[in-house]
Length: 311
Ligand code: PBG
Image 1 (cartoon, helix red, strand yellow):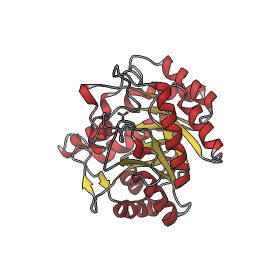
Image 2 (tube, helix red, strand yellow):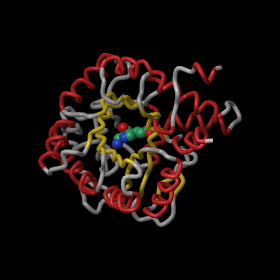
Image 3 (cartoon, helix red, strand yellow):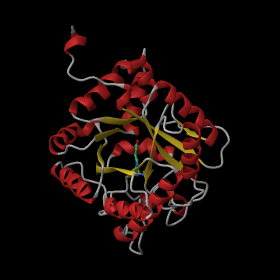
């Protein structure tokens, strides 16, 4: 009876798996603060994606860890950069069996760890950064990305990327905008995963949102849609379910929630201690994000939850 009348149904079709690929390694490296998640070599990435395809997971999103970082993050648009190589490999191996998304930012590629160009005063230069994002978008599209996902929170980034993609004749490459992205404490394990430390104890409060603000998120979403976003995202998810619900009421485009690294790590840590039932909590958490209004969820739980749902 509960099954019959359930209002919200979590499905394998709702899941997007975030994956890390690192340049210059030949075996996967575990990420201590993200149990079960690894930095992949190109080979181990292929093997993991084969498993995701087998499970019926519709999409993945790639993050890269380059061998060398510089002030501008130039590996982000190098055609032979680690994510571009991975995109080409995956496209060749899996064709259209899984949607390839690519996170579009420079923080994994800059030596200072910021999401853009830092000026002499130590501030991120919004407009100069847009040019880097445009180049990275074209490099990712060229390599086979179906959906680029700008996560740097620069103003005007969606328009800059849309223009660059259209100009390079990638007019069918979609944009999933990390529209409402908060300056959150829940990204901690992710920064271990991509070997990022922000220089001089800095933070991202100059470009990511203040978690006291809700209306601002809706304004960011409206901007991104007017600039050409095809889909929008709220991130993190759990502390922001109200934002997901408000966004759902406001927009008719696909809406994503990102169940981020810190949210995953908390769940795993409690489960490992036997303090909660991890499998049940995983289903409850992701179902709640859907119930709040998300159409799909980026989550490190994707494979294990798909397995549970497929049983
Ligand atoms: C920035 C980016 C971040 C995450 C996704 N894209 C980190 C940040 O803004 O500091 C976090 C994802 C997670 O915590 O799982 N490229």
